[in-house]
Amino acid sequence: MRVKHLLNLTGDRLHTLPLVVLYLTDGCNSRCVTCDIWRSPRRNMSLELVGQIAGALPALQTRWVLLSGGEAMQHPHWPDIARRFRAQGATVMLLTNGLLLKKQAADVIASVDEVIVSLDGGTAATYHAIRGVDAFELVLDGMRAVQAGGVPVATRTTVQRANYHELPQIIEAAKAAGASRISFLTVDVSSAYAFGPRFQNGALPEGEDFIPLIAIPAGHGPAAVALTPDDVRALAAVLDELETRFAGDFASGLIAESPAKLRRMVDYFSALNGAAAFPPPRCNAPHLNVVIEVDGTLRPCYFLPGFGKIETGTAGRAPLHDLINTPAAQALRQAYRTGQRPECERCVCPLYKGPRALLRL
Image (cartoon, rainbow, N blue to C red; front, top):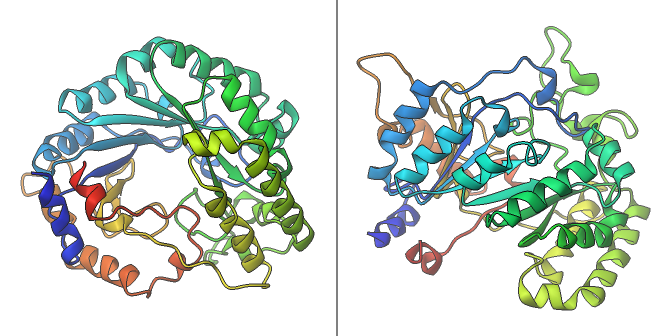
């Protein structure tokens, strides 16, 4: 029953698992400036591991499965995997860079319920500069092909120095390609867990510890994508323009965030520059979902460390329900909930669902 989801909010033990994020592969055919995952050899999630996860989800009342990566569409069996979860009653979403959407449109239409496309530029030149591939029109064509087949396509834009001035063009491009929802979030420059190794110059010197991007000098490496104080002031003006120019799209919900929520990006970038405190995120994601990496490593969200691993091929392997409730897992949930995880202060993608929302799942 849906009311069982509410039990997740009463403590740090999970009774259900409404959302599961699967990293089907850690390979990627983009070359983004904010992510180093494409530099590493590709690994694909094994079908044995997929089967073990799929077998556990009905008892956990999983409502959504998000296929991610890397680039999920590079997994050779991703359509079969998607259809397997759909057959169990889950809503399957595909998070993709969109490079293969046009080529694999038939599989997408037959296999998933929603597509979420990363659209990080409003022009071909900006898209190329950020994503490292010349594919702006290809991505838009893929969106049109999938949308024409009846699958809703949303866009997600990571706002950074190279593209904040193009937010109006990004909205127009997404609308022209038939987007059902347009969303924005600020670029992350500090996570040690979410986007591949993310070390300066793409490699970690032997014997050295992780270097958070925020510590890399301005103008070097991915940290350079954060906005300067002058950029922050310019972003505020761009957001004023959006509120007026796209008032109807805000009102209809086509643009997912309200103008007030978008202005939190100004606060976030101001905080990165030391000019303000970080806006406190409202988030209970670790109480609602789990991220499963290609090798079975479990994490409470994109930005927090792992707490266990699903083992395959062993007779004594622990069921998923037990793995998500180990002492380490519950300790992580307690730590974020009580403000003890520093990653949460700078979180760019909080997820919150209250009791009413959980009852509607």
